[in-house]
Length: 375
Image (cartoon, rainbow, N blue to C red; front, side):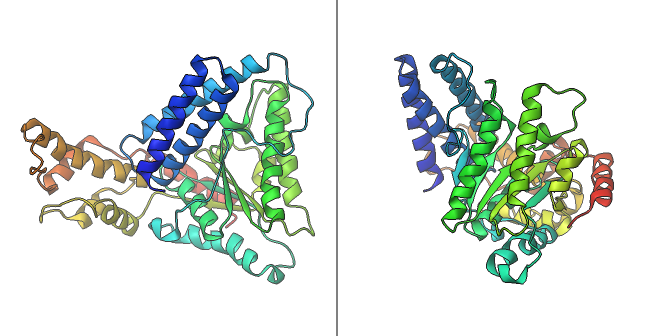
């Protein structure tokens, strides 16, 4: 299913959700809102370079808030009891990612570590009598490809992919958040019982597993439940094919018990020169460029830029051309097209867009990696 079809399905589901919401059919509205969340989450995962991706992310958050509000209307009493062992939150996405290794430029060291930790044991478990890592932590600056790496390994081993964060796990209802955690792992184990591996990807895991000076009871129970579930899949003597991949931009905020649960801790740094050049070539492959465009020079002067920064840089350069085309008044002529992107456009974009990560932060990541290295 291509992006346009996904967008059409998301619009359809959201429109139906609003109609049910207005008519007071809240159970059906929750169902449709959740479907829209699922589809928009797929779009954000598979097409992160879309210029309006931030709009979809805001829609997801808005729909999630509305789902919680509607649940409060349907369940006015504090929740407790009930069998949630096989029911995950409707906001949790279980999917089969289509992202492949070849879609990810650079990060060869990280790919190698992931293959050794996950792919090899899955293909030949008999060669790993002492077991293998089932907890992997990706850490590094935002925009460097942590989510895409997790999706790519899920695709590589044909695993069911659960993409969650604190917002999809935490609940204002007493006792419900830890049930979400238990249900998530139960659902993942259900897939492995059918012979299929499962990957639980927890983005911004520091929001759940971070160091806390003060905690309320609900937060403690969620953290304890997560530790319990992770210990369950790490149990010796069991060949579990449930993997937990956590991602964080702030590894120094993680609590020690959680750090220990991630047997592999992999630093995902900003791209080097070769990585930047590869990404520039990839993101400009569908653009018409002037002969004076020197991608190698651009790669050299963008040291410290993340993959996301570079994608935005290319988008900004192209936006200059499109903006100029609209201002000419020729946009209504179907035979007219924008001019090619020039080197000057890239230089103008560079003057407006600086790297999102500074050297001080990079040094902090490197120091943490040296202290907790496990790759």
